Image 1 (cartoon, rainbow, N blue to C red):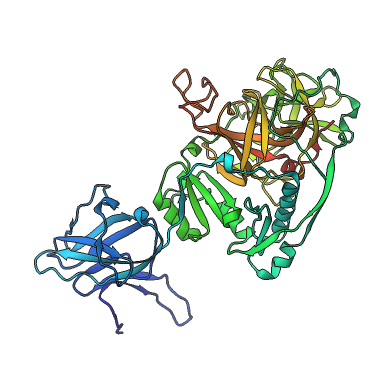
Image 2 (cartoon, rainbow, N blue to C red):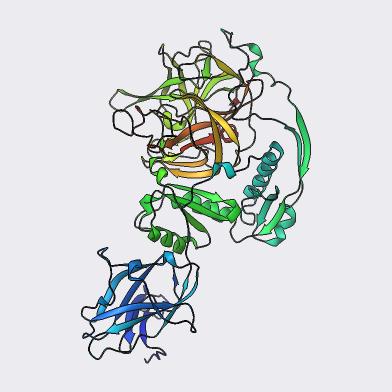
Length: 600
């Protein structure tokens, strides 16, 4: 067999064997060179990214090579700056680089200094006795995955009003109901419009159909914790707690989304989010560095976070999923993301945002204990329950009050595998974050629709007037109540439906992420705590359940360690980065678990 090779340089020949039955063998690929000397890498027509492998080959008497590039035929050739190239041993490169035995490989060109993607031509200029002319030019396409290094600017994130939140929730419901042709919707900060993208223009009329909102609240509270509310004077939980919540001001309105055609559907982006943190080093080099993944609806892509810059990871993700489908954010603080499982004299009727002991039986007959925080009193079929985070408990465990210590609730439902992370509850097709409920021992103990406020040792409480019935939206503000830090306000949502790999390897799925720039953060023992907004009357709307977060890495404490226990808990100082918190929306909790938040 003769194969015509039209151009000099290096080529790949792929060979398969086909038997009479039509079975095809595994492909074998051979690299060979035509001509006197030329490029081995990259090959003509390739897409290249942040890191471009450079290699050349030629006669054995060649002594050196210099790699050059240009944008177009009309441009002059320029040496690739040696400072942008590293050798296999990470040493600096000097042109001409030494060729040994006619081969030069293991060089990586960092293309970060090139201002724009597009066409590139690359060639090699050789050195040595009777050295050949420069190699034939190889044309490649520079197509880099976006690497984001800027910090999230909380002040630039607008808070949506109630109508926008409800309308966006409805648009998200449409996308989840038909995920193959709908894409994740978003609120356009510039126009104030709900944008409902589609991958097929035939679906545009359905995506852009008017959303009718009826009896939605005018106000669901804020992150202002200064409102006092009414005092908690009840010894027993009042009978009216399970009744209808107090009347509130509502509104009726309609919102019509605008549509646009995009390349990636809800199903495609969600599948990437679900898979990417499960990748191993065998799948892509550097996979172990991947910490979070979330859909960036406005840009129709998935954003993955890593603690340190790694262009090789970015290129590998782009090759796997498509360079316009994924972006990488370099965020050093995510290295410290962890669950915060580790106020103190809560008695029946038990309240939310209180310390409790999680008792987990072990196979040796002993028990493991953790301090966590209750979120909200819960009710199901008229019986009392308590809601907290799933990673605080186990299916065969118990919830004990802190002081005095009494066992008041065996665990009833738990959606967290303590070695893997979020799991789907029976009968549910989706992940529901990090949740657990304990069934309070009826006729012996009860719960009250209140949560603790003030500092870690505070005894005053807030009344749970109602709960959020939509998922959290970017820009919304809230407070958090934990047994370590007490009531901390000033949080702002930065991302929803997030997938996060904690430091212990467990993976949190379908979570909301929020941040604050200064003040007290969350700390060990706050896990399971209450996420809520405060109304002007001091009552609260339940919003979520704390899973974990960081004040990266919780600062350096007085003992010289960064474990958080002796830190000043202030993320404003030089030893800390911004605070972050991860939580499960209360709407998701009520959808996934039997029962609902107890209100009064």
